Length: 212
Image 1 (cartoon, rainbow, N blue to C red):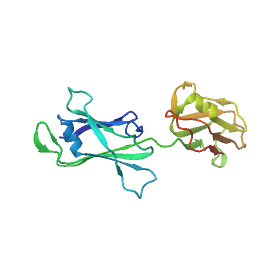
Image 2 (tube, helix red, strand yellow; image 1 turned 90 degrees about the vertical axis):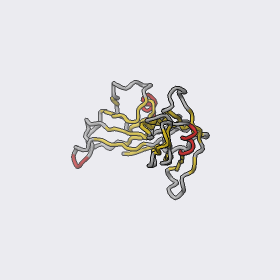
Image 3 (cartoon, rainbow, N blue to C red; image 1 turned 45 degrees about the vertical axis):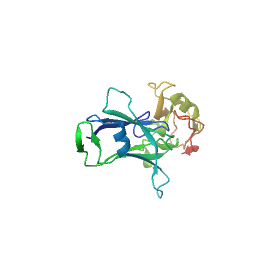
Image 4 (cartoon, rainbow, N blue to C red; image 1 turned 180 degrees about the vertical axis):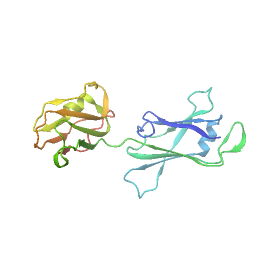
């Protein structure tokens, strides 16, 4: 027996939420007690590299009683934020179809979402001496999604510039990156700052951002 599909709901493999569950689909029927016997779930915080991964207690559920190839790994407590989450299945896993074992361990890597930070502010550097071009605008990327309307309110440019925003984004639409254009003056230095914005999980920006 082997796992054909592994994911997390909600959030996906790279953005687990504290209450996410892991969804597994096997290539044959597997008893939930057997999955519980061979499965090991651990979590390790990003800044805990010198620590051993902590075991995460869980239960195994059958989301569809008629589908014995599908199972959910449900943590008994909220998963820690900004942490690597690993699910391992022992090679002694057996299925309903007979005593043949998996013979090889299975490992699946996940990660809970981290703090909201600005990851990158950049522009087109084709101007003189590698400076930003005046008509290329700039782009800003965050570690998580925020509502576009809130991002517009929180972004500041000094000295002020009349800004042109992407027309294809609605104010209520979540986004983690956006391009900004404006009437920038050649040879002038501008400072871009961002503060007091929250991501779709309700997290405030971990630290105020400012960059020229």
